[in-house]
Image (spheres, rainbow, N blue to C red):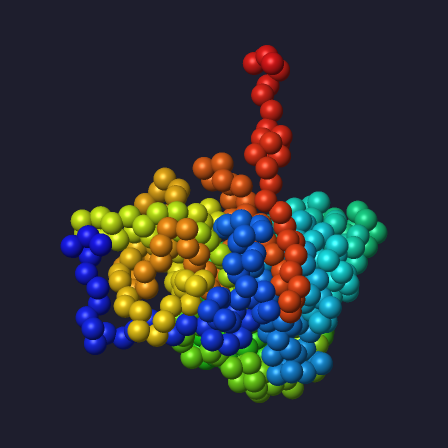
Length: 440
């Protein structure tokens, strides 16, 4: 140990809270996914690798279904994690899908989500994507602007179809979350200005090929308090009454995303509290209700498993260099996000902690997962797990530095399978070609 890197004082807290129950917990001294030791997956698949727990996915879905009951449709937001097996597990529980691209629409359909339970959101749908949604017969298109409304009318009319649409309103409610994932403020790019929604709804009713059926709202991701939902849904109820008073018909309300996720042990938001707010604010409007949770269905159902390449002892800092990188998990670099990082080999209760920077091998200073994180000693060749990594992990990954997209594994009890394999370099390069003038 470098003399400049000192241990915690003897009376300092021992190893912080480690997972001892749930989908990922220590069993016989090894961190396991349900009934499968992560060491087994690392040995047979290699690292880095994402590992998902099917039982936790089911439990997370049931938390919503039990709190809201059968009258609220739960459409899983695929952008959080669009692995086919993850979607299929949730679809088998009864989940629909919230999609934001033609590719996600095809993923949902191929994973077994009925078209009648799919909602298409997003601010920039192309004519091709609109046509794709209409041809599939999805539940509804959430329209976010007047130009999009005219595009839907044009495409639907050309197909001889009628598009059932909900207008996404921007309620100008600050969710109090990270600026990059807040979507309900008036300066955000999402939705139609609240004050103009009534006239746009009337316009929609007059357009060929369009049938306005409802209003949608989504104020952002990672909300750990329910007060912003109450504010947004209260404004939504006022808007519904005003539009109905103008002679228009509203039969559906899309309430947007679900609850946030406690990454650092924060108090977990309560599903039943949110359900009570929904009942109090919009429950009496006689509308069919849809909720679109994403992160809260999949985040704590996944970990990123990585190997330790080197332990670098600097004069001023200790670096734990792992084989996962920012291209595999971008959230810390993009959002300054926190992920609890634990050793796969269970440390003893009295193991001393040392401040470490946990970093990846990519040639960017931003390729840093944690700074001065207090952790037990972990040797080169050891394994660590980044917890609560099932959302916005693999789905946001890239091949930066010509690093292959990493595998994904699904565990269900004591069974496990690779559900996305690691592509070879030849497969990656086969997507590229040189122009003819360069020769062979």
